[in-house]
Length: 180
Image (spheres, rainbow, N blue to C red):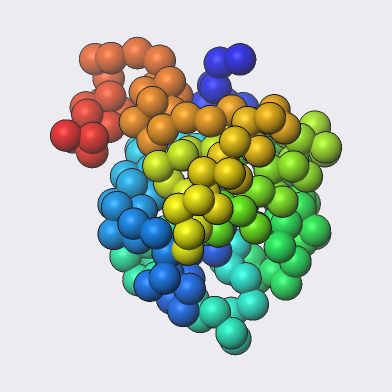
């Protein structure tokens, strides 16, 4: 299945202040998620953002929040984004079937969201270098499970170039600068 920009949205899940310091390779995650967000914006892919229980976990971390700008944050109490009606309504209105996924934690909110997306007829595209958990093994097992469930597993650079399809455009130049 090709991931085409006209049928794709992005979802950034729960990259929040109080949990983030404990996430495996969190600095690498910040760098990759930032590239992904900037790339999706350059290409024109709509982005949805969730925050889990803001009172307890805080807001989206500052570097990511700055890149997201005025994109609304959808607060949720459920682990799966699919159990939050505003997420599902937004996706339904967007008309997008492919959902590029980044965020934390891989083995909880990301995993449950991916399974529910598949059940609801969406095609989750998990960006492996843009998801993580507190424990490296939890991330590894979650990626394996998501693959078994039918999710597409990819990397940030790979999905951005797949969305582009062609070189020689201004968007290509922007993405090329990002990944250098």
